[in-house]
Image (cartoon, rainbow, N blue to C red; front, side, top):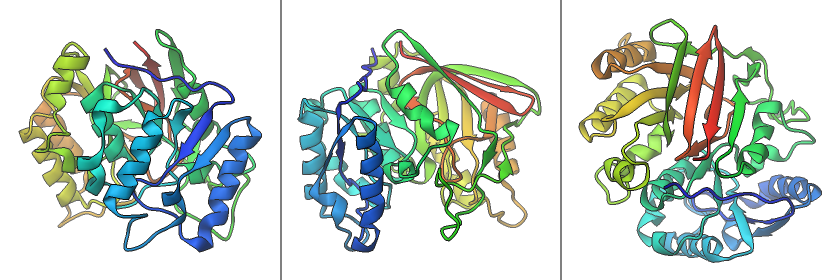
Length: 337
């Protein structure tokens, strides 16, 4: 059985940096984000790792893990909300105490998704792939981003519906901020490899494909064992977002996942939109999706609201979901069962 935390109004939120911390010149971003949460009635506690950044990480691996473990074991904290992702979260996995974790939400994306997936695979505790803390610092949030609260407030045996965004952000314009942080300029259009409308149902698992691939072959990435132990061998609905992988590296990664058995007993795959789709010798990302579709024989939807071209939906690792694409528009109905 999947263990679903619940985010109660007025609860305590812990902010820690299991990957990258925040350099001094950007501390104001975290102060703003924490202030927004406090204006909603939450109590926010920031750990020491949030405020430092040296040699591509917030702190040494043991210190990052210790601070995270402490927050996961404290009763008052119901949500852990890292400031953002990074590049070296993988270093802390061997120091994470999976056996003593209390069910509580961990929310984020990018490098944080490596930790999210490891937690769900190894404990059966649902985790939330969605906005980073830094992106809720605006005066308002767009409708898609703002759904994180409703999703995390969903009770066991209840469902929550999200709809695809109207527009997404193609690139950051730091000198032209909006009240909701993002510059949403490009029309959102979900697509399928088959070219037709698609509905896929299964247990959600996924994250940033650049980093979750590094779970393969480790004790923390046993997808088949997770299916047997926690979801009664129900099929998995994978969701991936690509931060930096060119098409050839993306292809190699997907083949590795296939050979490692990650796609056995899979219902389908959802791919987020990506700016990292540079073709290699005319080998395009659509070629990658088409080949995977032909090899696996499962539906594939792409350009969904997930990842580094915001806004993004909140995907709950472990939840049973119905993902639907109808005439370019998407819905995600998640069931906390």
